[in-house]
Length: 532
Image 1 (tube, rainbow, N blue to C red):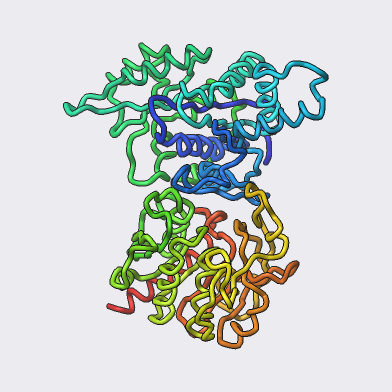
Image 2: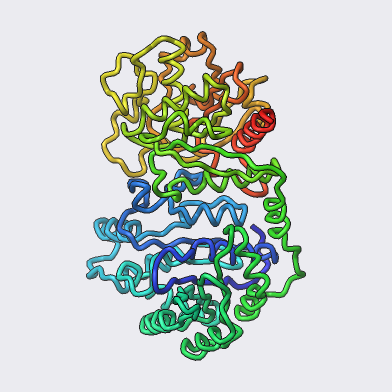
């Protein structure tokens, strides 16, 4: 990252009234606008939960767990940051209450505080400030998770208040607040007024207020928010509902939010950049075709559990001038008739016994009926089990995760995983090398012989069974050379049947779609057009 400013600046995004307003997308959009203007931006997500990281949470609790190159398990908002800013972050960009307290308690146990009484102020707040000060960029863009008034995030807001006093004129506070529309069609500002009042009680006056509303804020609504919240009317912005989150930076750009931020932070003026994001989104929206992909998963009741997969399909669709329509199938409830209505099938990651047989049935349907298929992580393991059962005649083949007593553990724990007791941060996490076999589908998709992709799993293809799998026609097209672990499998006689032990969705970008997703969309599209 090239710094263009002499002094580091900070932008803090807080949320008001209720959670789930889209602070992550708003923060990522602001970051993209500033990046396209030529500034170096590092985004940071603060989460108030006491978990050290979200890695042990069920997806229904907090949505997708997003994995970074360094193996950090983070909040899904870091996925927004990486995709919007087209960057790769580290675990330092996700700060939680649990990680802060863990560090402070460890310091206390070592005697680092020299006999002092360890308190929230100054010891917890100092640890928060020290972590934020480690970043080096023109702008550190900080999203405070939760809602102003939550007890969980008060210590973080206090730390940011202190920092803003210590580094006067280098801080900008942006408050995203909900503006409901009642039955008469009137936009109500009272919730936002109370939300800003709560923020003021914590010692922070927002510089900019963004109204999250079903529609564009009216001039009267902006006037009232400005009057009661202590900001100029030119500092009140609309964040209305849009068809796609990738449109949010364009919404803010039309209102010239970027110029106001530059002015308020007194950022060094640099030659204006082309707003590249607009061209990327335009390409995504100008599709010629439509294709339907069925996702057979365990957590389909919350689509955010598969957020990066949804986004990767947008990227892969844009690469093929196609709009991807997703059909969600709960792995314990779908029927074969459901699968007959889609052009391609994806079986994503997951943990535990529930839904295993349903996923295996989906794999079998795709394999036997030449339906384009992609398996990811757990999906690769289900593909291997299905192949072992129905092609290799190992009828009771299974994963020891679902059946510890299976006579054919084609999927099993590697030895070092079997010894692990703690659950948090102990999986095979982060980027690992994958050597690709020549003249395979994998080779054609990636057009290279070595790739580096992100992982999040404990179980692996059992090396004791690779011989029988290969002899029966399963191609092991990607191998981790350090451990000789299977990374990719495919079936050469199938139009498109491929699976990865890694998560390709975590590195997919609008600028650089994941090859496995663009490949699946292309194959599904060819199948659909071939039907006509």
